[in-house]
Every structure is written in C-alpha cells, then in structure tokens.
Image 1 (cartoon, one colour):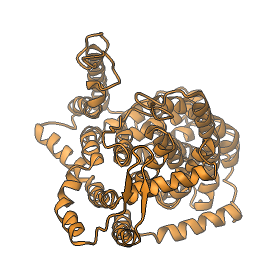
Image 2 (cartoon, one colour):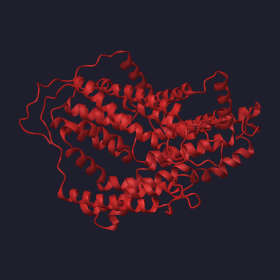
Image 3 (tube, rainbow, N blue to C red):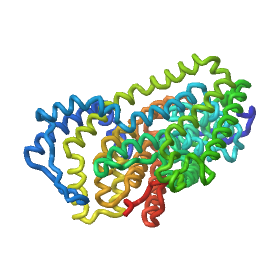
Image 4 (cartoon, rainbow, N blue to C red):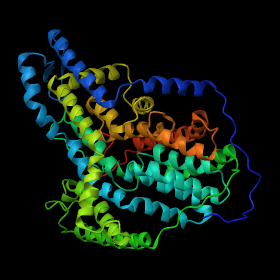
Length: 519
C-alpha cells in the first residue's frame, strides 16, 4: 500500500503525556482493577452472598408487595433443608436451561468457522486495501464497528492493518491503531447487523425480565433500529475526532514504511466464493420472508416481527449467515480440504468457548439462587419505590444508569459478566417503573461500550500497547489513554443525546423493542 519515495511532512514523535489528575485516576483504576478476582470467582462470591443474605432476610421477615398482582413476596431461606435440596437437585437444570448458553454457542459455530478459515481476516484486508485514501479513515471506523460481529478477531486483526494502511498514506501508524481500537471497543454495541452480542445480552435480559413476567421472551433484534442509527452517527463522530484531535496530536511518523500483505490468489478466490454464497443465502431468506404468505411470517397475522418464525429462528439464521460463506471461503482459499478440516475447525472454535461455558455455569446458579430466594423481585420493588419517592423515574434515571454501567465497565470489562449481575436487578426494577426490558438493555449497552476504549481491564488493551511499542518504544499507558479518551467523551455525549431523543419521541428501539411497557 505504500509508495516508495512518497513526500511526507517532517515526522514528529507523539508528545509526552503529563501525569495529570485523569491519568492518576486511571492508574488507580488499573491497580485496583487488576486486584479484582476473576469473573468466575466473582460469581461464586455473589452466589454465596445471596445464600447468606437469603437466610438473614427470611429470618428478618423481609417482604415486598408486587404492584401488579398485589401479591406479597417474602424472602426464602436457601440455607434451610428444603433450600439445600433445591440447590443440589436444580444445579444441572439451572445450567442446561440457562438461555444465554445455547444461544451463544449456536451462533459461535458460524462465527468460529469464519474466523478459523481466515474469512474474517481476508475480508478486513480486502476492504481496507481497496479503499481510496480519502475514505480510509471512515472505512476503518465502519469496519471496526462492524467488527464486533467477529468477536475477539477484530481486536487482534484490524488495528495492525489500519496502522499499516495509514502509514502508507503518510499518517502516523499510531493513528491507525488508536482509531481502529476506539471504533471496535467504543462502538462495541453499535452495528448494522444483528449478531452474537445481541443474542448474548438478550439472553440475560430475558432471565431478568422473567423475574416479573415469567412469559417474557427477549428478541435479539429488539435494539436493532437504535443501534443502526447509532452506528451511522458514531462513524461520523469518530471521523471528526480523528481528523480534528487524533491526527494533530500524534503527528507524523519517522521510520520505515511497511506494506499490507497482498491477498493471495487462493484468498481472492475464497472471497469470491464466499460472496456468492452469502448473496444466494440472503436471496433465499428474502424469498422466505418478503411474500405476504412467506413461511417465516406469523401464519395468523402475516407479521415478520410479532411471534414470527423469523424472530424465533433468528439465532440459527445468524449462524448460517457466517457458516455458509465460511465453508465456501475455506474451499475456495484451500484452507478447507476435507470434512475433517471443518470438524477440527469447529471443534477448535468451540474449545475457545470453554471459559464462557464455565462462566455460564456459575452465573446460572447465582441467578437461580437470586430468583429462588425472592431477593431479586424484592430488591427491584423496593428500589423502584425508592426511586419513585425521590422523583427519579424519567430520563435522568436512564442517563444515570448509563453512567453507572460505564463506571462499572472500568473495573469489570466482561459484558456478559456485568449484565448477568445487573440484569436481574435493574430489568425488573425498570419494569416496575414502566420501562420495557429492551430499553433497559439499550441503556446498559451504551454504558458498557463508551468506556471500553479507556479501561485497562479490557484484555486487548495490552495487545494494543504491544502493537504501539513496535512503532514507538516510548509509548506507555498514558499515551494511549490520552489518545483514546476523546473517543470515549464524544461517543458518550453523542450516544446519550440519541437516547434522549429516542426517549422523548417514543420511537421503537427495534422489532418488539419499546421504550415503555405496552399497556
């Protein structure tokens, strides 16, 4: 991508970053955040705390009145004989029926194969290498925000590619690293396509909502309209921040210009085959959805959204959207030669989900204890009553929840771990106040994204630092933080502004996704 002898302004090195208040604050966050136990250990601690709290609460006669049914809900002692039997006999069922578990594993079959065959990496290289220079920056942002569909792969693949690409057209490669990382991490919730992350958070939202409404079913696409609009806005915002702040701050680069590795003929053929496979798959989906009598519509109402096979089957539809192109890419690129290769790739992809499966097992037990003890609905009811008593029930409450989620994200970077803890409390609490679970979920997802770029707890921050040191050994955490902070600030302001507009206009967040509970 680079042009030998390209005339560029005299390079400058990135300015040193003073240890001001904010950097000292981040240092404290890093030190104490590193001392936190692993998320699995946290869930074990929370589970034990719930068991102890259930015993004390039951002994104290703690209760609350359900405002919908007027039923009195009393705390249940799980450390009694009956409680211990329930814990023992329900352990397997808790895990097997945990909604986020199956949903995520099914989608991961497709995503994992797409990553293992090299499809995701090849797509990113092809998209960026063929982009005209003046569109490179928005293209990196666009691909970065789409990259959350690929899970971890985007964090590892895109930043070094973006660095090489921007270096080749005369910019500091650190600009590419910062821009790509900020786009992936800060825009983590924004996307144009429903993907694995939507499935994951919807599973935990469903568990939380069922505390108040056992029949509630979460639709993975229920935030889609909001996220698509957010995607467009954040691409514009990130482009402005990059041009006005990041590029001037980081200056130019002094060093040898490297090139992006060209796609091989096999990789090009694989991408062609994958493209045709994806087009055919989408065409089949359109045939199955667009006609008024299409089989993926609700057979009674003809709706594509309400109780339709399309929404019920969204998870396997997403899986095949990745799986089918990945198979054809692998065949075309010759990364798949026999069925044994496919089986091995799928096995390796699922093996990477081992930590998530362990987390899901412990989280399933913790949430079950929370429900069995009745502490979940009691806390939700009492919390809602308190918020009503102080008059904090409107948009101020929602923005406050976004900020709380963002601050928690500085210490616990795992999206699933945080939402598994927060959803059983805040989803039913907000339901009592009249808010739809989709809206609570959306507020959480904003908070979960906006501080991603600056939290040292995100494991890919260390990878970003190692990439940066390849170009400038003097780069430290302070340099990266000061460069990433503007994205967090302007993403926060923009996203909260969009949320406020949505709140006052009452627009749907997505299919079956509302601001307020339907009357």
